[in-house]
Length: 485
Image (cartoon, rainbow, N blue to C red; front, side, top):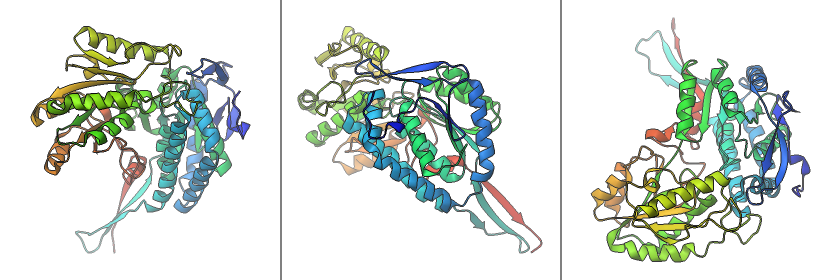
């Protein structure tokens, strides 16, 4: 059992209509610590019945919540934000236990997630309409913005706190109600957030959390319901495409934050030490299990060996282990299947000519651990280049010219994030504008912030989270034409 300052934050029931309830099926999901394999607790498992009930409750709550003042919604969101910050130690322990990331990273995620609640609390009061100059003297034309309605959110296991707040905060700020289906591997952070939302005074039915073992059944219930007017999903491109198809029959608004394959491009005029620092931060955060992780390192040939040597030396300083230990900088992968998938990519690359210069062998710390691994002589026909790795593995590919670098960088169906290291400001503009990504980090390895738009292009999805643009996915524009004036 986790030793929390507030044991009431560890929940094992579903949160629907402001109440903690068990599922009718009486089935439960065992939540395991990926570092130790030890069971933390069992959580109730919802079916389409509980999901349907949560949708009905959200529709009922919408009638009141959607008509509350923006100032009132902002005050409740700010209260929720303060409670999260006050309970950061407990929330970080819960996150570390169910997901595995080191405690320092877990605390960083809690603050990052909370920042979205604070930001959208402020944005709630800035959902402005417009007065449009009329073409006729007897008319007045204007627009107002209204909440889209009931929202469904399906969130992943790699950021079990922040991926929820990025969706819930703008939805609530806009006046929508929302049902969240968190990943079954990491439901405890979601339930703890719901407990604090309830304490903050968020009304019944406005936020519900349905945890379920049968993701397909719950997802279908959410996408089939005509009451649900918008779906927000973060996860794999494969699942995202299925959900988009399922939403078509009811013509839902969708926002998709899907897979990435981020190129990390380093030109010969770059500050190599700065590039190494950015590479470590981007590649190995959360053991490489982030959608914006550097996936392919493209390094100009003239500095290829110099960068590789410094990158290897810096990577050797990382400490793999149980994230509950303060000294650890890289925790476990989420499960054994993740380790197998990562290792299979490494072995395939090695068999086809890549050279492993660091790591490459499963760790003896346990079945869910994989060491930081660096490969050279990687080519564009290897799986490591073409697919999202989602693990602590860094393939390094040389290039000679700017044109070659751009071709390699864009040679993927994904278009979420990219990174560019150069001191040439002409190249910064030219290259950034031609990169097929929704986000470009320029001489910077950490790019996520609540004040900037997060999202991709191509098959990395649509819509944006965070920033002033993030609330637009949760509102409808209504045009009013007033005549007889």
